[in-house]
Length: 193
Image (cartoon, rainbow, N blue to C red; front, side, top):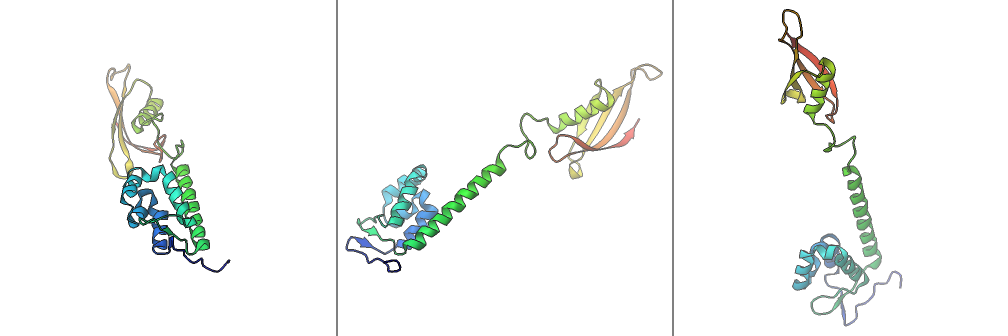
């Protein structure tokens, strides 16, 4: 009986098996296979519950694969090619699980590939850089939006003593940050007066 297809009994039908199987496999979370078999009420329930949070969908898929899923008339829809349908279902589910786990790995928080609330903003990184370079008592003006993501930064450093006491030294830089926005990678002095 390995390669012989089972003959439907009077309580089984083979109509719509492939349609029911593929609709259940790919759109079963939304009850589409139930709508196709004119089970509108339970189709709507599956639609609004997303396949009973996946449990109802999985039970329906097993029932289709086992040839026990019934249409509106109460006739079981026989699985006309069990080896192929079980193999296809297994491959699709494995790919779905592998794809889902791959997405969770790439989207999980990691300090090297995403910004988090505990990291400094671009502006704070630039202010810290200016204070490290020119001292804590400086005025930093940051303008952004330049080509390539550069920042135009003007640092005013107070002058103490001498003929310019009370005045400011002004340094204007073009600054680039690393791709994570956590350190200055390039600072070009454009103007000093």
